[in-house]
Image 1 (cartoon, rainbow, N blue to C red):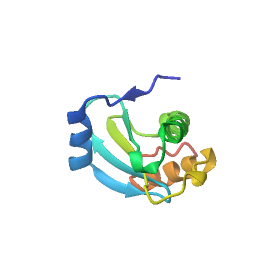
Image 2 (image 1 turned 120 degrees about the vertical axis):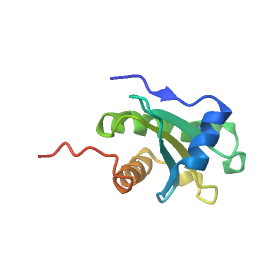
Image 3 (image 1 turned 180 degrees about the vertical axis):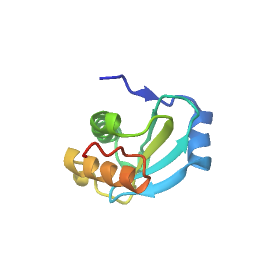
Image 4 (image 1 turned 60 degrees about the horizontal axis):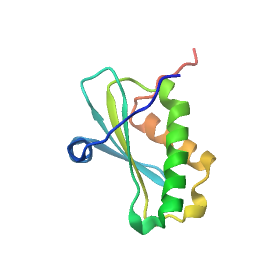
Length: 117
């Protein structure tokens, strides 16, 4: 299991959010952009309007864990930023919902590798 590389700098987020393609699920949104490296980078941006720090951190943990499980099934060389929809209730932040949304987003973006033959 490889360690997930995170986006850290403001200019990295800006590049993905401005040049990346937008995909939407029921509770999360994603911007996906090529990064010309052989690694995937993950960025999380959860708005303060979503809730207090404890709830925002819980959403981040759930998104990170869902991504970790799906990371081996997606193509390399992508930078991905996930956003939580502000108008969605935090009660919808379950592991199953987030993983389902992520799967759907990766299939829409055509970056998911089908392992079934």
